[in-house]
Amino acid sequence: MRLNTTELDRLKTSLKQAGLKPTRQREHVLSVLLARRDHPTVEEVWQRSRTLSRGISLATVYNCLESFVDSGLVKQVNYEREPTRYCPNLRPHAHFKDQETGRVYDIDLPNEVLIQLNSILPEGFRPEAIEISFHGRTKTQNS
Amino acid sequence: MRLNTTELDRLKTSLKQAGLKPTRQREHVLSVLLARRDHPTVEEVWQRSRTLSRGISLATVYNCLESFVDSGLVKQVNYEREPTRYCPNLRPHAHFKDQETGRVYDIDLPNEVLIQLNSILPEGFRPEAIEISFHGRTKTQNS
DNA sequence: TTGATATTTAGAATGATTCCAATTCTTATG
DNA sequence: CATAAGAATTGGAATCATTCTAAATATCAA
Image 1 (tube, each protein chain N blue to C red):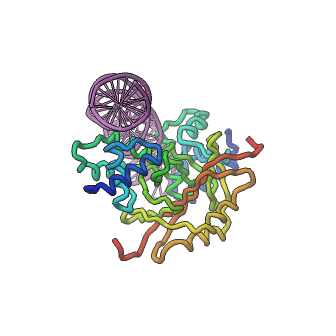
Image 2: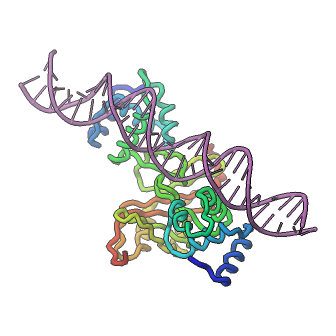
């Protein structure tokens, strides 16, 4: 989780492009999020951010993640009323939650599926977002 | 919300078929839920159930709704971390939330859409349920 | 009718998230 | 570089949907 200057500059740039002041905490939380392609909760992001030299408060992790979502840098995933999870994958995708492991997988959404889904809406319905979540079991070998 | 004997018998029967003891409270909560095709929260179901002669506790409304969901009599709908809503429509359907009114609409899911959605899953993924939620705006005339 | 089991209940407890008000940063401008 | 205005961070308190608890009550098979 130690960043070299190039990576740091890249982070600063994407924060600025998103209209966010590049603070030490935001850079760190964003790098933590991008470092793994999974779907951590706020608490998990906080744990992973503990390495930050002078520490970081839970409230700040909440703040950072909220501003990232607002500015489109990450997405949120909710399963029932479980703690919200955060997802750095910006392509259109669905989620599949394995009930045995609790792990959430990204499922790419082909454009034709999105088109077909929009076509089932009655006239006058203007969707701004769509969320598709499966849950079930997987029989895969990759942990 | 007053029930005649025939309707009451019908409710008792569906509760029994679902493996639930037909109590006064369950009959009432279920009838409240079936009376309108909307998506009330627990609090709203409780308000609508207040007519019950000796009253009903919030805890019981939670209990009833949970047992209905467990036995397949109703479905749950969640938008982000807002209070859970309950839905008496058992056909496969998606939800569309109008951001202006907060109202949730049912959108029927044609079988071909379900088939196409299952086809995007990698091998070994066995879905047990799928949840599809739109949100956006509607330009309809019906309130 | 009665006993075994299930349900109801009020209120306390939980837990994710939001709010608050004080401190510390960032950055544009002189 | 210094500074001031606005932003971000912070620990702790507050919120609020939901779950838990344990005692009272209801259901139903025998």
